[in-house]
Image (cartoon, rainbow, N blue to C red; front, side, top):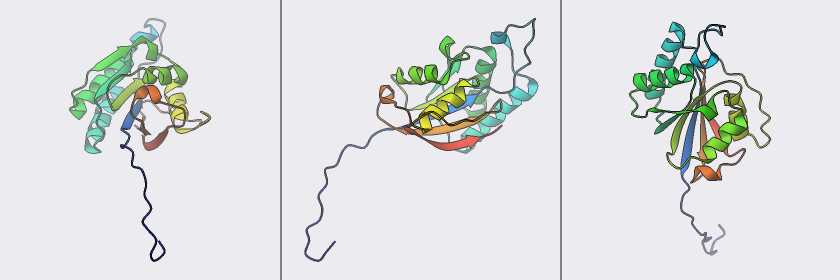
Length: 178
């Protein structure tokens, strides 16, 4: 500032609330079979171990969440339960048929409908989880990714209410493969 100039005045706004969204593709599941409906496919032993390791890693990295939105398929629920147990989290999976094999746009709308929680875990399926990530971190939704089973992404979003969520509003903070 030049000598003798008065300090610049700015109007201060109340700080906005930072939201955190943890997007998780369910862990490794049993292969499709004509004897087991897709919704009822369980985690494999390796998938259960992946989910437990992930819960521990999330706790060690300080990745907390208040609510766990979860696709209604057995493999998604088992993933959420194992992450919650291994990480020592208090949340219980909130099962949603809308998240079962949902497209990213549907997941985005579901997030906009959320009334509570500033830190959410969302456990769902490919390709919807990567479509959602693309919608959140790009204006055009044109990012192309593939998540291996058990991959976690953390998105930071600067907004006060979920209903104000807009494409490109998020920033990728963490991408953790299994």
